[in-house]
View (cartoon, rainbow, N blue to C red):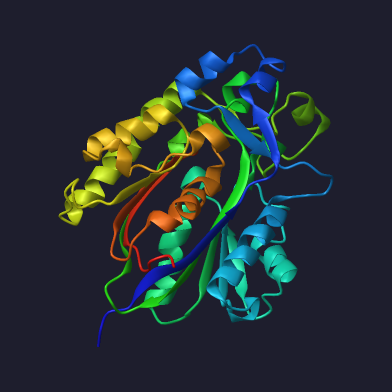
Length: 332
């Protein structure tokens, strides 16, 4: 009997209409287009506007498009893993909200919180449910409304983040295609350098925490950059070595879109040329859990069955990891 792997059989994405440009940010904080572009590679990012709209609303657009593309009904979905740092609510889980909104009445689900590494953590987790035979259709969603936790008077964070959502459907494959390996890591000592200080059980919301702006994302840029450059590049190279992959064997690197310099460092460490690297950071910024699935969505038409693909990410707290997969289909 052939070994079952979890293959991605469809991807889709959604970004809001509103474009927040570097020029507009120049009117909000002490920065410039040249300063932002040279340090991050970002020119613009998308922002979800509209009262009462949350992360699940972007996911509805992305997932409905995926279901239509794959030609299946939402009732066929068995499990939803929603990877997000900005859930609609502390509880219930945004996965459950999404299931209700799309009519996935036969699915159970939960939220996965691993900051910017969430989607690859979710992909690896979802693959386990497929490989075990427990489920045949697992939906992995990665999305964030980062604008909801960004202080637009703090130039260390407001220039980086944007809103967006992507998703992937996992199904069984016996051709040796799909998720073949993953390396996932965490180091909680990084919590002081990138995270949100208030709003949890340690520091519940009070007038004081709100006045002190502790409910916004906090980042110590130089420390985070140093950790990210080293660890994201190392784990991508490690998964290549573990699977005897050369740079020539790799068809695509799909890196988390946090900073162009981190992406370049990862590609250099792997020996992968720039024409094999998916980059859309200049248009979307860092959408946290949305970056990798949005790349797969935008590059889908260029992917070929059997392509060796390496995903790599680094996130706050700290989290990081890589996934090696073989693409399972040609786009018609």
